[in-house]
Length: 571
Image (cartoon, rainbow, N blue to C red; front, side, top):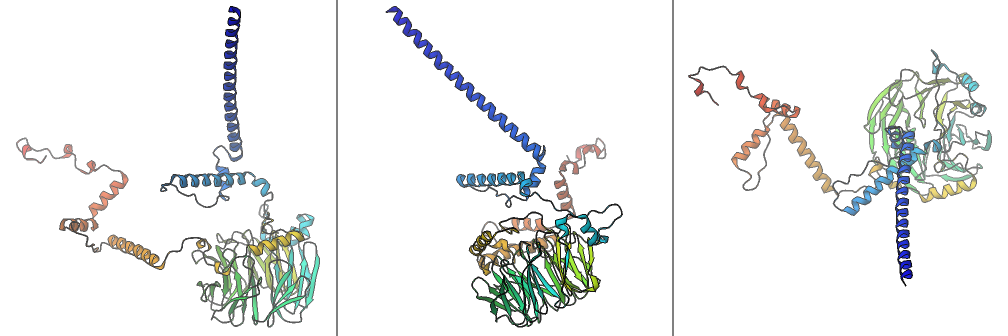
């Protein structure tokens, strides 16, 4: 029995020791796991610092363009649950921006390049022949000339992907080309004056502004529709996100036609006479018109009056263009000037002089400005930001052919020129966006992808009511007219009060309730409104952090009085 008891005690002791060993082992594993986790975190931070730099400045710069707006402040929020949700969302936004910046080298593999001269060489002296000799074979094939001397001048247009080209001759010649493969898709002769041509949502349909009406054709050149409500059209524009075809005619009537339903949306009378200059702002889908009195008006289908009217030139306008961000506007007039305007401030930034009247202006995806006047084309780099002394490139057509229309090819460093003798394509390094988004525009899309993109575009179609001058207002809270009026009155009252105080004029005091309108308080308020020299000096010293004791004259500097009179001095 004693041995059995000893054995039982021994077993219990071994079991306790085994349990202790298991606990120590588990504790050691937890400690090791924690150390391994800390090591991984340290290594991840080292990798991030190696990618973004030790101070992460490079990473913040790269992630800045991926951040979705300003950070939401949670200081004044009392609800803890809402505050936590907002903090979590903001953290996720920052993490997604940093992750997008990390994989930018895979998302954006290509970088745009410009002409770089050597020594005293100037870029505007380089000809197309010298540029074609230096580029690769595939790029050299993009510079070509189509001689069509009998049916010009030509209006041109590219699809949003930049793959297909549409030509429209003044004498009725219409053609669609897959210009990268040099393949003609369709060619027709309508035997009628054609003033402008424009692709619709894709290359399957296009519109032609002919002598009397607007006609819609398909990819094979078959006439689909005749829009008889659009009389004597001069210019065409298309809004792909709204499926709206806009025209302007000889009488100055602006029309919006819905191409998805076939209904006429609205007609606006500009009341400014004949208008042959029209261009859409890609940022807010507002239509800009250039008139013969030198003004530019901006229109929306929601108002029968212009949203804005701006005097740009002292003569009729000949050309108009907007940049991709919708912030700058370029105008050209018969006064020989090409002006750059800030659309946000409605103020001119700077202007350029054209040797002859500019017939067409165009802005590329990278901000290169092309100005066509006569038979020459000038291309300006960074001309929208600052005034440039010299152009970036120059090109002159052979045989003095007059330019009718110019258009940059999207996602390509190519400028298309429609002129009297046909069509020309020139290389402009750095004009196109080197990276494209297949969800926006895919130059290599298949038939199935094109059909899916068309269905998605119809499902995501925007209504004409959403075309406003400031698209950021869409989705915000609309205040009532009384609240807006009250807010304006408060702001005006504060501004008038501050102006009166600054000029030293007497400020009328409010009549307050009982106990707050005493004579002493009214006198104190009047004294507060008085601006004196001493008050200005004291305010300046308070702002600078000076000590008021230093303003008093120290006793050591006072004049020494006789001992008999010292007791009468003020202490």
